[in-house]
Length: 188
Image (cartoon, rainbow, N blue to C red; front, side, top):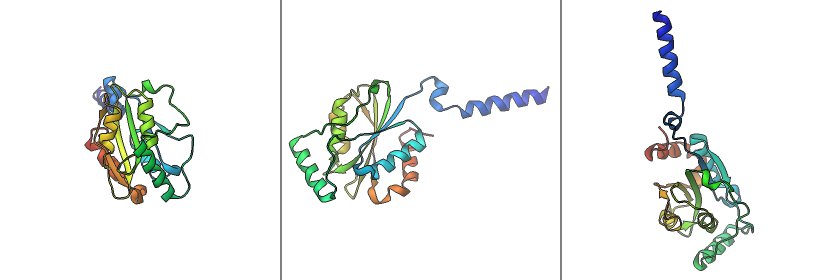
């Protein structure tokens, strides 16, 4: 009898500990990892690191018109777009956006802020009551004004502490991503 009770208790404890944290409380959150990455580069890699850690659905923000192939031309075009307030049209949208609770939002840092495509994404969707978890790739400018600009474009969202990741180190950034997610309470 003692053996059966012990097996029952061990099974119960094991099963309870293997259930995701949100499922235990009945508060399961639907996660979206939305990112803009020039030519599927650095920001995509960080988005994949996040997905490996927290799960969720991934969505690549893409513009209808591609940016130039030469990086210096990209930065020149981005600067003009940012100065003029231009918002590029996006190739696809998320039809069930309202179902998501937590949106990990990734962008390269262009001229001290998020890419114009990410600005379009923020303006095209209703973020009221949602949590935005920003991650920004850069080559030395870190977060810049990205977080402030996200808060301006989605004023009814809860914007958490962002993660800056240097572009040259994205491949080895998984430990930094995991640490950041623990610090902001998104994982154990």
